[in-house]
Length: 303
Image (cartoon, rainbow, N blue to C red; front, side):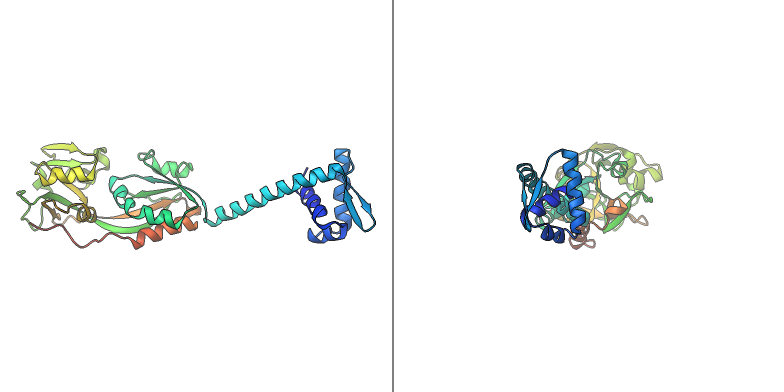
């Protein structure tokens, strides 16, 4: 059976006459009768007969009209859901996050975003951290928070906010009083980083490796709070977004330092497939992110 047959049977049940049923479906009476005769021929059973101007459904017709009521309701619900999906008002957002700082920031906007989109299923994952761009293209991810874009035609990058990386040291550190520092100042230092390959760490790829500098030691720390505790106690130095340090350094004796002639400015992006840019919940995420931009000017106390 085709969907039109279910629509006709339901219309016949609800309207009671051939004329009214045909009018409700925007069909001619002859077209409706033709559809029903073909269906009866295919099923080998009579579904309705006329009684004056009215029509009466047979037992088989009544059964199928009851089925039609359920089928049409299901189809209508599916169409409504698909329309909402197409408009980006509902659905599922699988969001990848490829950096620790991204996680720290995303926590600040997650709750208001969840409240704004109560019917949106959201999954936040780091499973594809090392192959996240391909995961978006393969529909394993829907979006990615990243500060290391790889611009190409397959992805759309929407800028969320700009930020600056600063070197964090104890306010008792030998470099703490410097107005600016140089990469060579880190030659004898222990550097603290997240547990990521050196090729993906700004400390190495932007500060140390371009100047052929090898630190005294390299310690990996998973949690930002612990990393700052280490730095405050003089156990090492770290390179972090200025806004992140401003939020988490309360009560710690820390100093933020900029590098001389080495601006470390970055931008946080939301990467999506181009066709998903206009989905309302994607636009909503961008809007939440841009309205909650972290401060970019202040630094921790200079000692």
